[in-house]
Amino acid sequence: MKATVKGRYEGDKATAAATLAFTPSAADLRFKASATDAAFARGPSLEGLTLTLEKPGSFLLDLKPHSKDVRFQFMNSALLLDRRVSLTYTHSTTLSPGPAKPPARTALDGSLTFDPANKLSLSHTLGSSGCRVKYSYAHGQDCLTTIEPCFDTANNAWDFAVTRKFQGGDAIKATYQASTKLLALDWTRDSKIGASFKVAASFDLSDQSKAPKLIAESTSNSNFQVCTTYFTRL
Image (cartoon, rainbow, N blue to C red; front, side):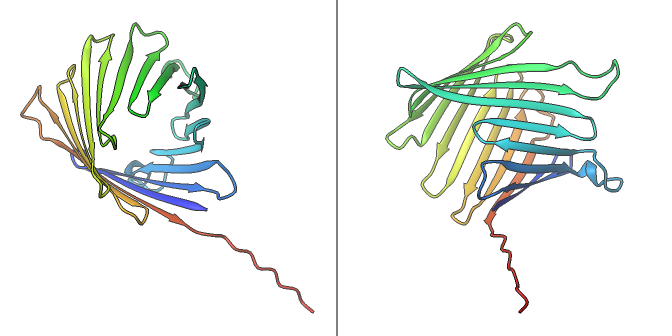
């Protein structure tokens, strides 16, 4: 069995979150529980708790017991003319009764992989007037530099992302959203012992009086076995 522990801290809100995930060795399913500090602020509660059941590459089910929000996600991929085509269907709704409940939301995501260096992605929310089109290009023989321009047809705005990977396991990513003038910088380090660390900072260039938003994440993976011993009394 594989266990993953992830911690997250947001400096501007002084909030923290933790995630604990288990992957049984004999199954493809993954169980995950995530909680923010709201679950413990006024004693143990269901607020801020999210339960997830996932089969990577197939389906995902999210449940928030406090608000009764549910998210279903189904994924599939196939080869079409020697090109990898991937489709994702996501439906979000709530099980809580009452007229004030938020409307359901359904989104479709698709991608076409031409080769290891080039991929085209399309995202659309049903009922909306636009979509997001993103092109991903990995440059170089080892594909260490990735450039991702994205166009939002609804807002008529561009987003840009550049990621640079290094041989030691470090990666730096810069993202700029033209519609909100938000600049984000991420630094990630992966170790050989199954742990990773991430530091992110975002800057609102439309209002330079705002302090940067800082986020720190730490993830640790471990493998362990559950053994059962049987004793026979003679």
